[in-house]
Amino acid sequence: SPPPDGGYPGGNTAEGQNALLSLTSGTWNTAVGFASLKSNTIGTVNTAIGVNALSLNTTGINNTANGGNALYSNTIGYQNTANGVYALFSNITGITNTATGAFALSGNTTGSANTAIGQGALLYSTTGGNNTAIGQLALQANFAGNSNTAVGQGAMFQTGGTNDNTAVGAGAMSQTGGDFNTALGASAGTGFFGANNTALGAGAGTTETSGSNNIYIGAGVVGPGQESNTIHIGDNLPGDPGASACFIGGINGQTTTSGAAVFINSSGKLGTLTSSARFKRDIKPMDSASEVILSLRPVTFHYRSDTMNTPQFGLVAEEVARMDPSLVLTDKEGKPYTIRYEAVNAMLLNEFLKEHRKVEQLAKNFQFKLAVQQKQIEALTAGLQKVSAQLEASKPAPQMVNNP
Image 1: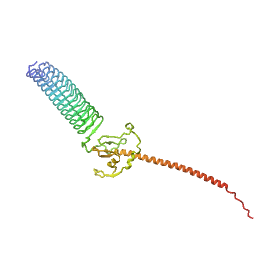
Image 2: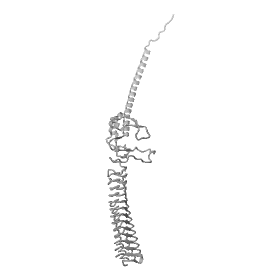
Image 3: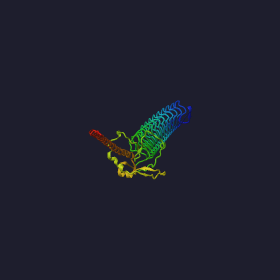
Image 4: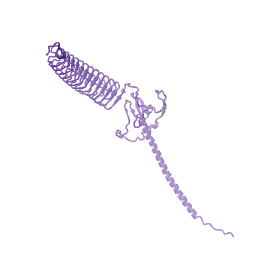
C-alpha cells in the first residue's frame, strides 16, 4: 500500500491519512482526505475528495465522490457521482446514480439510475431506480418507487413506493401514494393517492385523495375529493369569481350527425341528458303538469352584450320562475339564470298530444255520427222507395172512354 501522500504507480493519487490504504492493483484512482477510498483494492478510475469519501469501495469503478462521507458505503457500485456531504452515503451496489447536494440520495443502497440535485433530494430512497429529483427535499421519502420525476422544493416529499409519477413545482404532489400521476404547479395534487390523475396549475387538485383518472386544469381548481373519472377546467367554486368566459377552438362550424346536446349546470358540470329508463325513477304520465306552459309569455329580445344586435326569441327566466321554478336554473347567487328549454319542449309535446287525442276523438265522433246519419238516410231512402212503390201499385187502372 502506498504511503498517504503523493502520486503512485498505476496513475493513483493519495493525499490524507489512510487514503487508498488497501490498494492492490487498482489504477487511476484519486483519493484526497482522511480514509478516502480506504478499502479500495482493484477498483479503478475512482475519485474521492473528502473525509471517508468512497471509504468502503473495494472493486467499484468510475465513481466520483466529492464531500465528506460521500459514497461512503459503496463497495462494488460503479459510475456513481456524489457531490455534497453524505451524498449517496449508503449506496452499496447501486450504479449510475448522480447526487448533488448535502444528503442527496443518502439512503440509497441498491437503487440505480437515480438523479438527485438539491439538499436532501431522494434522501431516503433505498432500492428505487430511474428517479429524478431536483430541488431541496424533492422525493425525500421515496423508498422503493421507480421512474418518478420531481422538480421543485419539496416536490413529492412523502411518496413511499409510488411509481411513474411526475411533479413539477414547489410542494407538488407532496403526499402521494398512487402511480402514474402528473402535477404541474406549486402544491398541485398534494394528496394524490389514486392513479392516473393530472393537475395543471398552482394548487390544482389539492382536495383529491383516493380517486383515479381525474384531470384538474387551472390554478386552484379542485373537486369534492374522492372522485374518479372526472375533468375540472377552470375555477368555478361558489363565492369565487373564477373564469368569466371560455373559448374552445375546433368546435364552431363542425357538424356531427349522431351526437347529443351538451348541458351545463350552475356549478359548471357538463353532461348530456340520459333518456333510458335505467337512469330514471318515479316515472308517471305528465298529465296536467304541462299546462303551465300555456301561461308562459314568448318574447323577442336582444342580448345586451350582443354588438351584432341579433334578434332573439324565447322566454324570460324571471317570468317562468314565477310560474314554475323547476323550469329555471339559477346562478351561483341563486338568481334565475336560464330556462330548461328541453323540459319546455317535452311539456309542449304533452300538450300537443293531448290536443291531438282530442282532435282524434272528435274525428271519431264525427265519423260515428256521420255513419249513423248515413244509415238513417239510407233507411229513409229505402222507406221512401217502398212508399213510392206502394203508391204506384195502388193507383187505379186507366179507363177507356168511347167517343160516339
